[in-house]
Length: 365
Image 1 (cartoon, helix red, strand yellow):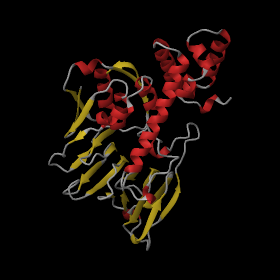
Image 2 (cartoon, one colour; image 1 turned 180 degrees about the vertical axis):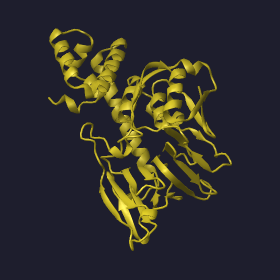
Image 3 (cartoon, one colour; image 1 turned 45 degrees about the horizontal axis):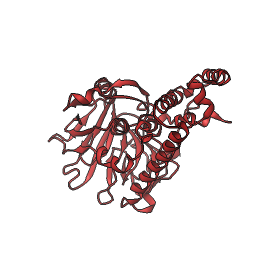
Image 4 (tube, helix red, strand yellow; image 1 turned 60 degrees about the vertical axis):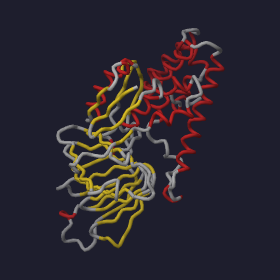
């Protein structure tokens, strides 16, 4: 059996792994202890699986029935998410490929969310708790990361982005009311909210990107010889500044590289190419977002302490409207998630509300 393809939920549902966690069988204990040493890359998944087994072992009723409920709940959650996505007014050609729809957040949602999934009956009410109330941005239209390694931003339309150090975006006048256009200088990772009526536009000095709802990364530093756009989910249409007649459509796991205008002044046509994403040979993750993919691990910590980590990690302020919620405890592993998806995953364990007010996230019961 190929356990390397297992995630936390798969390990937790394995009878041999359950016996190992409960220290009930010496052969199973020896096998899994050795397997864990031989596969350090699965440490996070094994840790999450042990938490699930411990949780289910503490509940009343048979473990087999509990695990069946957990698996049924996860299946129902997947179907609900798919139904919600299909209900959005997005043209068929803009729909994300099914193989990449859950590129981000699945493990975090399983580990942090399985606590409530195991109890059942939570899915239909979940959507009432997870959508943050996003207010209009302040009068200033320029958002800068400054010296922070990463700065997380929630835009008025519900889209979120992570700005890299020394990067900035400038929102167009009337953003979210009349348009969804911004100009990027530097690098940013985008998770765009769906709105077929107002396409999301990202302008750089080398190209313009048009999307409806998708996940992508843009690197457009002033003074760099090349600029690039890397697509992870959905579909984008790119128009190069030096060749506006040609439109390039990227598919998931592709990126476009373009010679920066200042380095290509004498060229008749822009120097550009479409290539696959550059995967790391060790962890098989895209190198294009290595800067935003650092893992944040939380192990049974109160939300007050987690908020401090999230502030440092995402470069965004977090405050509490209720002291009681500070004591809620969570576990989880976050890798490529935006701050909204991280909070969304945490909500699955002990529900709370949060809203965005200017540049601060406010958490309440």
